[in-house]
Image 1: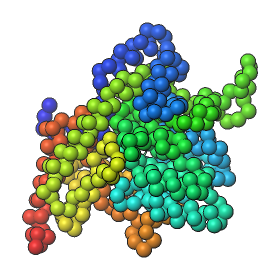
Image 2 (image 1 turned 60 degrees about the vertical axis):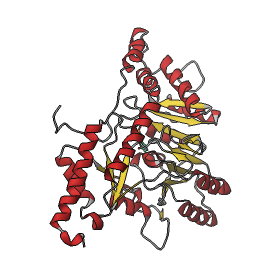
Image 3 (image 1 turned 45 degrees about the horizontal axis):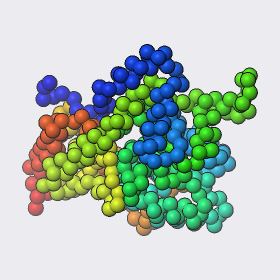
Length: 393
Ligand SMILES: *Cc1c(COP(=O)(O)O)cnc(C)c1O
């Protein structure tokens, strides 16, 4: 271990127990995309988030795709989607050939703006082209304003899908994110709060919908002795090995959340003296798993840009990243509509994109490592202020 040892943004954090679950899969020869760990992982998840049905699949993206199909969405339909998110939230809309419409963030949670959603739905309703679903993301673990969003969706009779890929364990008014809308999804990719190395979960209280998704996820084989198929299926199921890893990880979820919340708190304390740095707040009534600590920097106050700070950290062998680039700004989604939070001002998601940085937040981050990150941020900012003394005046 040296001082320049690499610090990653959010690496997989194994418990040591995984090997026993994987070993049992080997011992029982369940090295297949079926097996007892899958059923148990689904049951354990159902209990944890208090939802009727769970379907373990091979990615969070696949779970989103299946949620759209379970709602009967086709190429003729429109789907509203948070713009401030990872591309995987919206790609499944394009898999289906449906049309995405992007909704801005609001400043308190950085998640979907109820104002923008309301305006978009009102306009769609007037034009007779209401969307078939709204996908709301709980970014970086912070729950979105679910009461407001759900009420608006219900008024227009549009189902809500929650992309809770980053927010497993977060709650909104005591309810786990992912279980508040019609369907929810989680991701167990290597960078998420718990991992199966790669995987995802579709959850819902619509038992038939999840059963249909399960049918589609296993090649859509009709009930017949021979191989008969009447519709397009997918090979989306999670393997028994991956589910075994997930079961071990799940028993440590609470510890992982506590660790990430502590990391957030230490960044807040370590950087509190610096003006021009602000943190994503935790909305009252919500509990965030603090998957990633993200800060906004005001370049004019601190005299350093997002790029400069990321490069300064990189020079110290520390991985930091910009926040997600809003989807309405992506070349892939050029030409699709976007509804801002406030028509008079710059879009909130664009402002966050200009100022946001994700800091190393892995649950195995040590205090010494975190002090290195904090120290690097402090020295980058203060040395820059020395170079530009006029900024102090
Ligand atoms: C990680 C992630 C996904 C995709 O999950 P995969 O398991 O990697 O397919 C979807 N949405 C968001 C917001 C994510 O962070």
